Length: 381
Image (tube, rainbow, N blue to C red; front, top):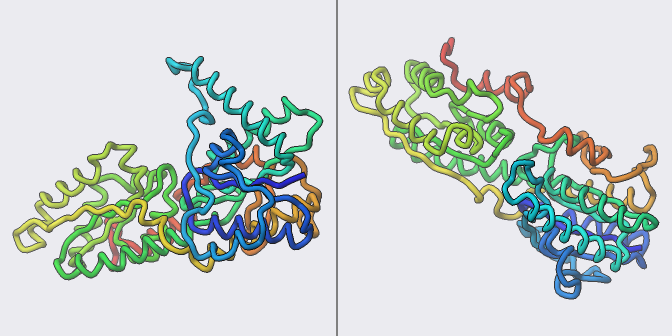
């Protein structure tokens, strides 16, 4: 039986290294095992096989890819795999489209004799893979099939793993941007309100703010962190202690909770605050808005991301070939391979999906660290 590999959802630096690790680790032990690459994410499962797949992949096809960002296999999101709400006006049509997609994908996997499908992506990709796996088993109950998920997302919000592939590179990209933008805000004595990616989770904003030396961080999980009045009080406290510029980092999910005008409203509050105007010498302090956006995903993967990809990809090969990690209990059913520190771990895919996204909490060690290192409204020194 063959092994299929695809990348899905948002691209993440290190995905190429993960594909390479799965491929080489399997071929090192079973050179005759066929590896199939599916291009374009899940969409590649439901297209004509001759145009969306590569069969009998050879070693040279995985050379020179680990230094490249993104994913050489391509990726994308598939609307047909999204959950359809009960009250959706086009629910019947959506369910019919999903059924058609799943049927074609299952038949293609059957024809390609794929027994193990490695999906590198986030929790949405894992949920889509679970749908495909269930449909395959319903159509072909006598054919073995399982999904192995590898966490690949810059949000680092997958339950069951300390880190996801791509997070470290994105974190370094954001910190590099903060360091560069600091030069201009310090020169002009300004405030910068900087948006970074993170729809529901604030890990990227939080850790980049800590590592980049930001004054304030606002994340979706902690409502008090994005209260305008609270932020202004922090800036006043800093100004009274001879701060002359401020960097405010916030996750995009904050704006989605309050509306796209959240940052503009904060800028007006800062520029019009009477105390800040007085402390600034009678004139408003200039505030600039900026967004790092998809630049965080770009560039070559960091050494840590490529190492993590190698660790997880090799562990996935062990599960495929042995049904277990070395020295661990046998693994059954669809799973995700994550990491606990430097050690690979395996979790049920159902549990990973049910418990994701992994969110920041106010008692998270990193959030507590941020409160000690950044400005507070009652700054004691």
